[in-house]
Image (cartoon, rainbow, N blue to C red; front, top):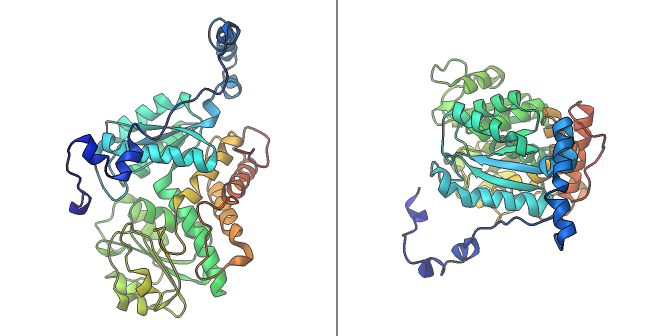
Amino acid sequence: MSADLHVDAGPLAALDDDPAFRLHRGGKLETRASVPVRDTADLSLAYTPGVARVCTAIAERPELVHDYTWVPNVVAVVTDGTAVLGLGDIGPSAAMPVMEGKSLLFKEFGGVDSVPICLDCTGVEEIVETVVRLAPSFGGINLEDISAPRCFEIEERLRGLLDIPVFHDDQHGTAIVVLAALRNAARLRGRPLGELRVVVAGAGASGIAVSRMLINAGAADVTVCDSKGIVHTGRTDLNPYKAQLAEVTNRRGHTGPIENALAGADVFIGLSGATVSEEAIASMAREAIVFALSNPTPEIHPDVARRHALVVATGRSDFPNQINNVLAFPGLFRGALAARASAITEGMKLAAADALAAVVGQDLSADYIIPGPFDPRVVPAVSAAVADRARIDGVARFPCTEAPPA
């Protein structure tokens, strides 16, 4: 944890002088009943003896759990606390305020119920086994703030073992919003995505997922960099996930530092926490697109980037074009749950990105390539596209073409 974020432990009254502590006192979530219990008749239906009839029916026909419990409408938000926001490995207890916050966003933006679960284990086998054992209680699993490269294996294993949506938001939520914003930036520039030279700084969870999604969406020239420079097939220090990425990126054969890849490039996407010099951005092609997404400090200050770029986006709310995962995950899960999807497919993620990009419509400008998080059109558009794509991809278990209202 950086020194400027350190908080001295002290009397609660002193902590409560800070509005953030006051807001968090007692937590940000509660459980509320969805049916009344006003008298003995209500009690006998909600609990014993009426509940026994429902339990017996589900025991005989397990699929009825999706009709007569909350299971198909609730998501587990799961972390091990190893990669929390910009704070790093702070452990499961310290991660809870963030997971509560994620559940709050699920509910407020998507009308989706969720339960924050912070696991006191970090081994891949332990996490996978724990989530599999918890899965019967949930309609979907949202993995959160688990460090790379373990996060890739954990998600892959869970996707193979479970028949409900498993989604690592740090990877795919970021990728969906980046793709949506880049589609609109490319439209503003008047060039298709496939003609743009893209450089991605960062080869962790979000960097790899963004790169893969851009390629799946048609980007033909993507170069990825990590802390040691350009990712290429000649390097012997790559983990298996970076090595796989090296096989499908860097078609120009760049080596060395990121500056070698940025010269003449059309797009810079920063997901690294590092810094990029003004000279490197100035070396890019005319009307460049710069997404400096590290928080709280972008790879280059947006005011500096604007001297050389047509479009600048950040991860911050105090600058235009905020790339915020809340634009993706509430609508994506709402659509997946409405369809009772058995998985989240690549097609569903691409559909979410396209729907999100389309919300901007004819209002597109250099300072408006992506909707704001409070735009009421976002969740309905994304959820409907995701539910429809689930049906097309054959993973829907409920015949719907759009998600129901929250």
